[in-house]
Length: 96
Image 1 (spheres, rainbow, N blue to C red):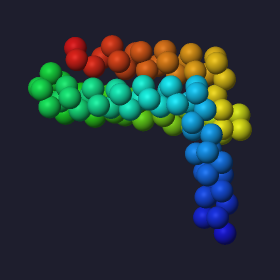
Image 2: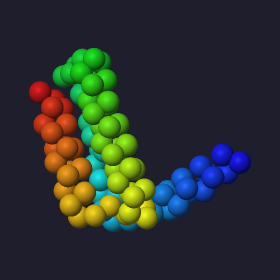
Image 3: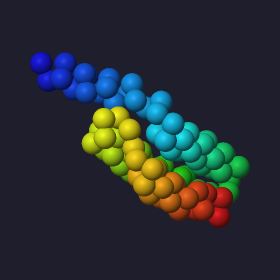
Image 4: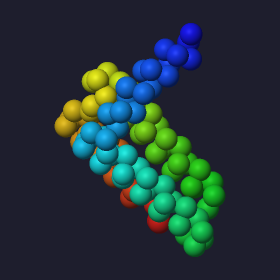
């Protein structure tokens, strides 16, 4: 029963993940993930640094999901700005 309830709410949120503001935030997170992996591969950052950056991105992703779940699967323009500012902070740490 719980799995069915959880599955349905997840499906509703997943359905809305293509909303333009959510798609932009999620695209940036995916791009940062690739950049982090590339920086480790080229030796520009350590695995420990990468782990910390991945953790920060994971926290942003969790926040994005929480925001969307409160808004019927959407995020507001202000929430998008907030998430982008957080992503900018992580982005600046990549490759230093």
